[in-house]
Length: 170
Image (cartoon, rainbow, N blue to C red; front, side, top):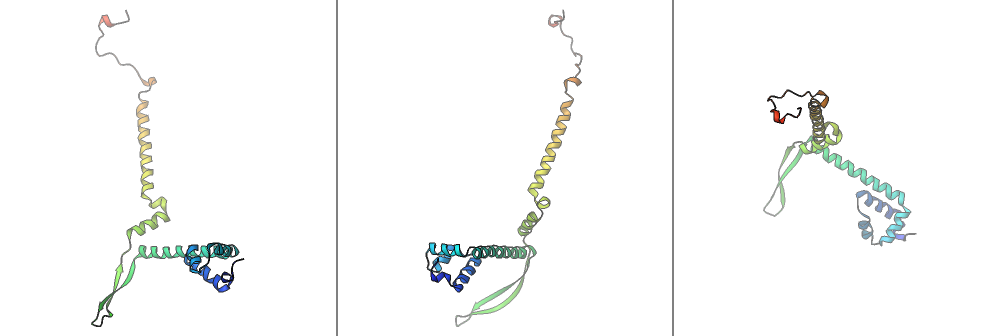
């Protein structure tokens, strides 16, 4: 059984919130000022809740990455603020602009390659084309070599007469 400090509902909720935020076990038990063994016992007692919180962190992280990727794919608008320092040393907002953000080509390529790799992965397409070309070249070589098959070979007449001293038929 873990100490009283970790068995409070409020503490358990706070721990699970930190797990959902992505904090490591070390960060959590040092912030709580408890030993790693005490925290490990708490984890064993709350294994399902802990696992659910870790899963929720993974889902939240994936959603965040997808939102950021979509912003890069589609582009959009952002607010640009310009500040200056006045005589009293305070920062004062001078102007606000809306700036258009263009879509990023790398983000678009990443999205397409992962969405439909058979269609958009240029490296794979190039490899397939090279294999097809290599097979076609090999086919041509085999066809060319078939001309030289012994069955198809007929000796041609000698262009020059063989001198009698070299003629072995006599």
